[in-house]
Image 1: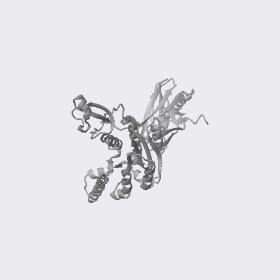
Image 2: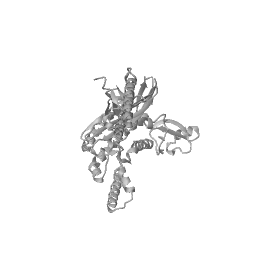
Image 3: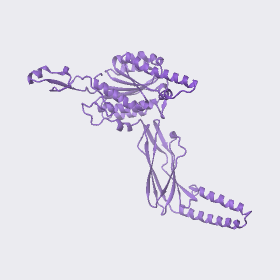
Image 4: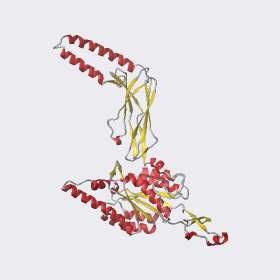
Length: 443
């Protein structure tokens, strides 16, 4: 039975059989076709037997291997490589069916290829995961057939492979601050104008046009008989906390990813940026309880701790408890810190319920509330309204969009910074706000 398990009859054999049946049917009207049909049966069986010998004689005629990365990057294309070697002495046609993890719901995966004799081919395809967790691969199935295409033999490789999907570490390469010197004011996307200076003294230098007049050192000026100014550098090792709301408001999907996953990906990048800027990076998440706490530190293993904590963020999308968040911050974050709060408010009523806790947090820390634009509303607003129902829908969409702007103004009224952004621009807008806060010396 094991011998016949990898044995498959190809479609071409059945098509030929159907043609022969048609010939037998036509021979009822044209008798000469009966002999031709009988000859065709003999030829088909002969070729079938020959094809069987070609494909099945010999061992390890096809070698295959699936090469997987150590981990997948959530929300990004990830390469999977299939290495197939043809040990047949002839040209072979292969059909590859890889058993992709169930999370992708791909049921029609197939790669067809012709392999020259004694050649190895590396075939690549991309997978874009949209949730964190373990992704289990099944078997790699390769169906080999000769040029006759009547029978095929199945070769099976790589059973039960698993790849964990982590927050988007590929964004680190895209947004990483490399070789940024102490005077860098640009991240590569948006320039930030320095409006002030911090109080960490560096050196005394000659005055040049554009230097802040408030930094003139009058004693040094008198000694050198020319204007001298104090030069300061950015204060370092300031605590930067990313706080992720993992409640039900973060369940909304955008391009396959939930708002929660966008916040997780942004947290990973901003933590890396903060460490590159010599600040301390930390994080925590909350809904009914506060979890995944990483104390803000600046050490070599900090990014690994944050990455593992973000990977392990689990939620049932409960209603978020801001009172518990405030109590935890009051108890555990004792130094003034920059707090980046990733959440979402759709209406003023939703904000007003949590505003007392946000105001209380902002008294001790520099709070930046980051929430999301509803891109579906933007599309609805821009579309032309042709019917009464479409007019109603457009008016309601404009109302919700206006409330988002009201939320920004309400937070500003209480001295709370905010970022209203689309999900795809979340990371870069957060980085630019962080750099602006650093440049202005607000923390």
